[in-house]
Length: 37
Image (cartoon, rainbow, N blue to C red; front, side, top):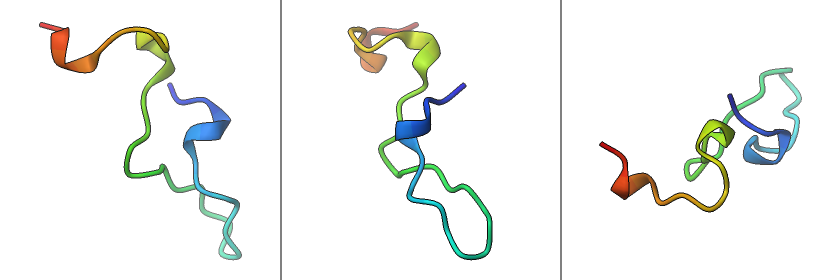
């Protein structure tokens, strides 16, 4: 579950590739992933 802003710009080959630092939106924008679990 990623927001469109977490993907790289649309590529010529049609694939949508996640940015290396993409953050899933299911965690919300305020939570720190290192504090989960």
